[in-house]
Length: 271
Length: 270
Image (cartoon, rainbow over all chains, first blue to last red; front, side):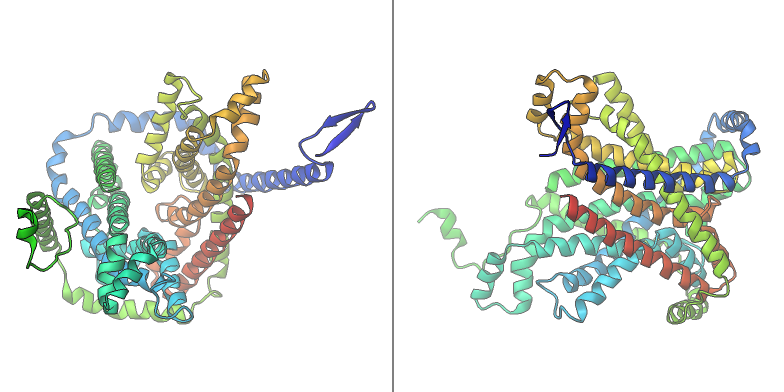
């Protein structure tokens, strides 16, 4: 226990002077990095633009209210497309993620040395690139539209789903698999009767969770031309039609909240 | 022998279905299959466009074998630099704002009115997509990293405050109680009773958020909010796929490094 002598009395201290000093040094370093970062941002900002920020906000707010409610009839198709991107994208992602997950899990991979690293690389690289970037790329390959968004969402989701799924596979109960093996089952039968039933709840949970996230992401894919309600948002923003913009934002908000509610309900029922 | 057993004898065993109610199960299957068919029907797939674009896709994949870091190195460097700066600043500010909000959003610490206000802030921050916030902020503040910085700080609040508040709510009450029994003031109670219990989780979440913020900062540039996204967008517009590949490789490597770093730090503090 660190102590300090003070007027002949021993006073309890939380840390030794040395560790205290290191801590202060670390804080100082962190603070310096932060101030430096802030300085950089500040240097790249036109502060004189900020003089009338209040006016700009008030101006946009008055222009944006009330939302143009009649425009909602034209939003049916975009919101349907957005939902289709999220749902079909999730399904496509799961179809691709399941084999990747089985190849990446330590207990099911055919080769720890060769196949597993490749599967992990697929997981990391698809996970670290945002769906908007995938969409940007796919728009230039398959052309603007729902298809690009769908593929972008599904590629982005592979890593996420496969990662959670392979962690679930690694945590399965070995005894059940052993029991199925003992009946003389083939490897395929072991998979179907020993492993799959154990990961089914996790699988369903992951699917619904990712679907919820994909609804959020698919609402903005249209900004780069990949279909859905983001396309309507982009075209309204381009002509500064603020009443339309505010209505679209409201619709997106409602869609996101409903998606989250459905996902929470379904996950609550499964787990 | 009972009648139920009699009825089962002589029949092959079948796996119990995932959803036990047959009516609900079939409704679910038929409903989802028909939705998928209808939704798929709605996508118009332009095969001739894909055939034309395919060459470009192949060029992109080839570019990963030969990424071009040099010819636009100055743009890439500036973009990455701005992304890192935005990530660091917004993570720090986001954490600093999240902590009081997390305390307010924990039901066992805050009184009901404060709890409701803080939960509302968290809910708003979570419901708004980063890109949409960035678009609005760019419209208000103009192009540049400030819009991206505020967007990321705002998004950090929803994530960090929510998870931290949950951790505070799940903390061990007796430790906090013991501190209170020594006659500690409210700040001492938080500092010595609550803070040590949630500190490991706070550090872990902060590292994780740093990682997320870097990933997000890579796309904010697409809407003009600063960072590597702007460089990436330009490279896509010029069809310079080798530069795109170089940028994507840098992003992936940085994310992998951050993930590794956060794994090491989390393993050490727990």
